[in-house]
Image (cartoon, rainbow, N blue to C red; front, side, top):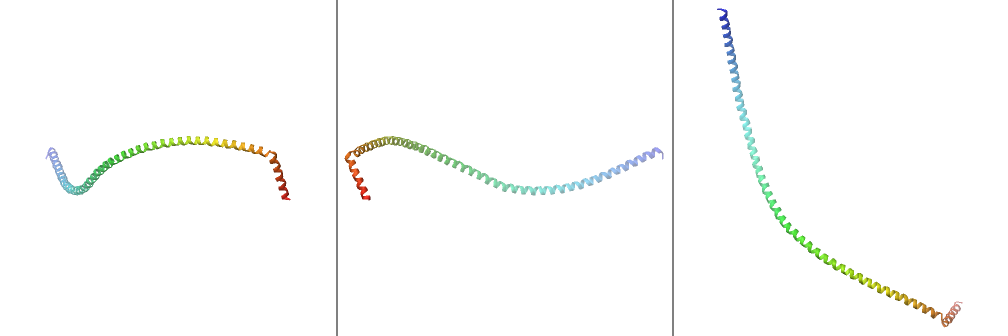
Amino acid sequence: MSIKDKIIFSIMFLLIAGGAYIQFSYFQAMDRMAMMEAEQIKHVDEVNKEFREDLRKLNLQFIGRGKHLRKAQEDIIANTELIHSTADSLGSLIEDVAFNLSELDREVQKHFRSIEEEISDLKDDFKSERRKNSRKLSDIDQLITTLQNDLKEIENLSLIQKEKAKAKAEAEKNKK
């Protein structure tokens, strides 16, 4: 065997060994892939089971929530209708109160006018009465002054002077 044959033979041997190694690695990779695929299927089944169970629970929760949502919507509609009816009745009550207030305002203004007229009349009557009383008082003062003057004149008369002196003398006698 020549060197050329040995080289070719060794290259062939290396090629066969390399091919065997590649074949062995390929089978190992295929086995690993098969095992990974089996684990993936198992895992996917578990995940799908969990997902289905969670989805079922979620659907049940949504059904329960849906009932609550429907109830809440019905309550909102009922409250809205109640608000509208209450607003209508309040509107009419407000109009009634506004009418009553305007009527009360007119009556109060009328009463105030009549009271102001009565006050004015009373002021006039008071002024008139005050003038009358002032005149009467001045007349009485004048009369008193006149009476005092007349009394002084009467006391100054000699006859009364004599009688006073006599009365004084008798009073002093009686005291002793």
